[in-house]
Length: 470
Ligand code: BYC
Ligand code: FE
Ligand code: FE
Image (cartoon, rainbow, N blue to C red; front, side):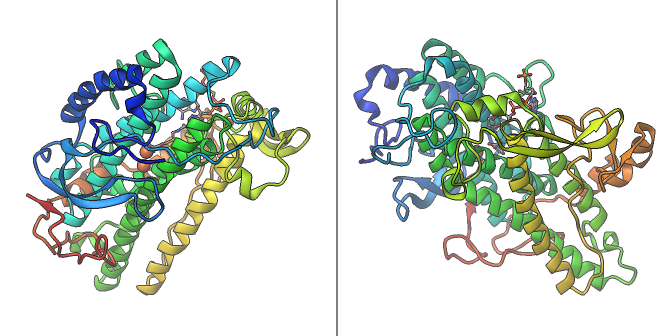
C-alpha cells in the first residue's frame, strides 16, 4: 500500500478515490484547524518545533523529523496495512471473516466506542494548552508539542472512521468532537479524567504516565477488534502512543531523581528549602491520576464489556498473542465486591469482568514503573518509597464508587476519608506550591531546578539542541 503524502490530507487509505469522503474530510479540516488555533498550545503556534511526522507506516520509516510550525503539521490518516484473510479473533463470531463494514446490529456500540476514544484526544490537548508557558526546558517543550500534535492526529483517525463508516450520524459526531470542551460544565468531555485540570508539569507527567497509559490499553484492546478498519487504525496509533508514555514515565522519574538528590543534599530532608517537589506531593499526584485513570476502564462488572467481547468489537490485551482460548464462554472471575457495606468475594462470568481484567494489565504496568522510580530513590540513598494506592481508593466509577477506602484498600467511613483527604490527594496549597516552581526555562541546554535532565536528547541529538526556536 503506498502512502499518499502530499495530498491535502496525507493518507494511506486511497482517499483520492473516494471523492465523497474526501470532500467530507476537507470540509471538516478547516473546523479542525479553527479548533486547534483556539484550543491548541497557547502562544507557540508560529514557532518552529523539531517534530516527528508520520510519513509512512513502515516500521523503520514512518517517523520523519524536522522543524515544523504546529498548524502546518501534516495530520494524516494512517492505518497499519491489512493482513490478508484476517478473521475475528474472539467472541461469538470467532473465526469468521473480519468486518469490513459496520455490522448493523453492532452499529451503536461501535459508534459509541469510537466517539469515546475520539473525545479523549482533543480533550487532552485542551487540558495541556497552557503548559508551554512554564516549560522546564526546550526538550520538554518539544515533547509536549509532539504529544499534542499526535493527539490531534488520533482525533483525525477516529473522525476518519466516523465519516467513512457511519454516514450522517458519523458526520454529526465528528462535529461534536470539536464542540465539547474539557472542563466546561455545559459541554464537558465524555470521560471524567479529561475534565480535570492539567496546568502544571507535575500534572502533565502524571497524566501522560497514567492517563495516556489507559489509552495504550484501550487502544490495544481495540487493536484486536473484528471491525478491521478500527483494529488497523489503533495498531498504528499505538506506535505513536509509546512516545507519550515515555514522556510521562521518564518525566515523573526525573522529578523523583531530583527530589531524591535534594533530600540527600538538604540538612533535614525538606526539599522545599531547595526549591524541589517533596515526595509526599508527588505521592498525592500519583494517587490522584492513578485513581482517575482506573475509572477510565469502566465498571468492574460491565454488561457492555461482555457485549463488546461477544460481538468481536473489543478484545483482551494481546488477545491473539497471549491467549489460546478466545470464546471465554464458561470462565469465571473472582471479584472483590461491596456487599451489605463490606468487602466480599463473588464469582462472576469472565466476560462481564473484562474491564477489570484489562485494568489488571494496566496496574501491573504501573507497578513496573513504580519499581523503577523507587530505584532512583534507593540510588540516591533515600529510605522513603513511592507506592500505588489500592485500586479501590478514590474511585468514581464501578463497584467501589460511592464507598470510601484508604490507600491500602480498607473500607472507612466517609467522614474519615474527608478528614484524611489532605494527606492522600493534592490540596490547594500543594498545587499552589508546585505552581510557584513553574517558571519557563527556554535557554538551550538549561533545565529547571526541580527536575533532573533527561538521560539523552531526541533522535540522537544532544539535550542542548534547540528543539524549539522561540
Ligand atoms: N467516566 O459498563 P460500564 C486515551 C459510563 S484514553 C464517565 O462499566 P464500559 C487518551 C459508561 O459510559 C482511552 N462515564 O463501562 C489518553 C456507561 O454509561 P451507560 C479512551 C463512564 O462501557 C490520554 C456506564 O458508565 N478510550 O486514549 O464497559 C490522552 C457504565 O459503564 C466512565 C476508550 O475509553 C468514566 N470514566 O467501559 C489522550 C475506549 N466509565 O451505558 C487520549 C472506548 C464508564 O450507563 N471506550 N462510564 O450510559 C470504552 O471502551 C468504554 O466506553 C469504557 C467504559 C472502557 C470507557
Ligand atoms: Fe491518543
Ligand atoms: Fe497519548
